[in-house]
Length: 73
Image 1 (spheres, rainbow, N blue to C red):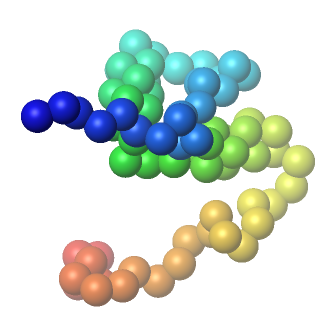
Image 2 (cartoon, rainbow, N blue to C red):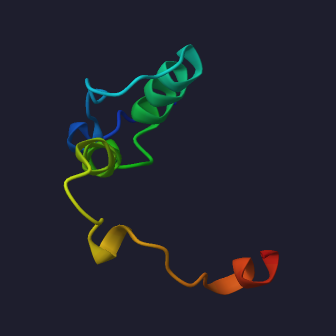
């Protein structure tokens, strides 16, 4: 059974201005290889946090939980 390669549009290199541990490096590589998550979006929010130019846009702020996770608080 051939494995499908993830879409290259979801891959991204690690942000260069952040300090990170070996565990972070391994997690980044593992998640990037799976193609399950859009690493470009993760990199985008990390850069917003590192730049700290102002408050985060509304799309990145806390939001009410939905579904089964409501009762987990």
